[in-house]
Image 1 (cartoon, helix red, strand yellow):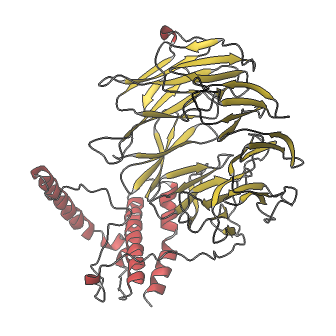
Image 2 (spheres, helix red, strand yellow):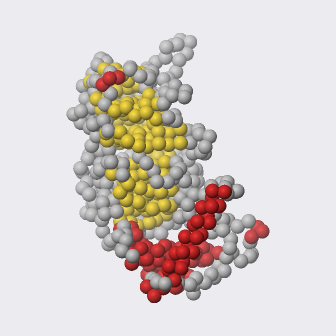
Image 3 (tube, helix red, strand yellow):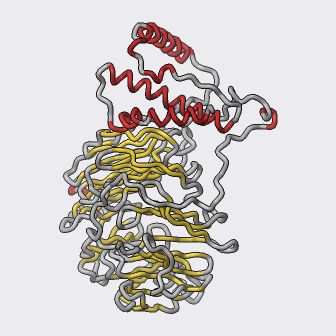
Length: 567
């Protein structure tokens, strides 16, 4: 029988540890912490240690016995972080100065995880970028000092052995590659001048030793995404404020440790919502474009290799093994989830998780949890556990006067769990006890109690982004006439081939007068029309993609559903 994986939960009344599937329930080996002063919790990367802050105390627990190994008193710590192998625990607290101590006290502390013994303290005044960075083997330690990056080796925190001071550094990132250490940094440009992303190989930090140098305009900040091997990285450049777009502007750039650089070109205009590498390291997924957003998988040459369609999505989550891909739409989106076979590029399932503020895959790769947490949302706090088939298997809500602040699975060493086998076998599930939000569109009072055949609140998800300019230009009118002429020609050509048209073309739709049913009927008709086009393309000899073939296979189910709705 599979072993349940612990789930750490922090709420307004303290910290507890629950169990995931198949057992669920509470972990009896851990004594719940009853306190309103718990601020943060986390596991080391191999899950061997668990740490949390309770008021002025940091506690470190060994998870094989779930007992304290260290209690650090008298701290004002606000954030915690483990080193990559869990050897050290770092804490950051607010930097404070006063008349008696105008220089302030070091506020970034390093402790030995195994016993909580104090190792070293540094001054890092700002909350932003407080966390130092390590190489994956912990042989290299680096931190940002003003606009320089300083380096220490072999956990000797007393001696600086390297420094990048050839440019002003805003942020940086160390490659997870072991043996060779690459450092990528963002150097903002002066007003009107480009910013730079510079890649160095440790310890060669002179300007003439730059391996790759990528320039870009409009970059207030940069986010770094390394692949699992650490030999390729994506830079997401972000401009918070832009006159031409409410979302600001984003750009996605590729850099390889061999010096190659390129821009990832998107096929749809608009913001970039999410970027994620497959843990297998050979491809990455991007969600981008004005609503409805487009999802595309790219290879290492930054070429699109598979389109996952458009829809209300803004988040990407690969399971740890990399063979299952989850796309979701959260925040101001309704919480729709798609789950894909990432290897065979095949849609597995769909489900809805509205009001989700946190999603995380289980280490074993077949389950994921969704949670509604405060302070993002203070109503309906709790979490749910789902199977990759889209089946809800467990849910837990907090009390009426409580809040859920943080939740995470226990971590495990890499390779502990192998790639899960994706199966179509049905699994048992439950029905959520939470009330579902109405899917019926809002209708103004003037439109109520009237036929709704022509009533439309907004365009459906698959409609392209439209310009906000109400008056079309002359060029737009000219293009419109050309499109209408092409449609007319296609209609004439199509009339000659009616004997060969797919049967779906003859499907008639009768509206019922029920707004909710009619909305579903219209959506089904739209899908059937799309299938008709795909079948025509197939008859003409076009090679369809896997997801297009799966749509055609679903035609029978759509027709059945349409018939039931029109009864």
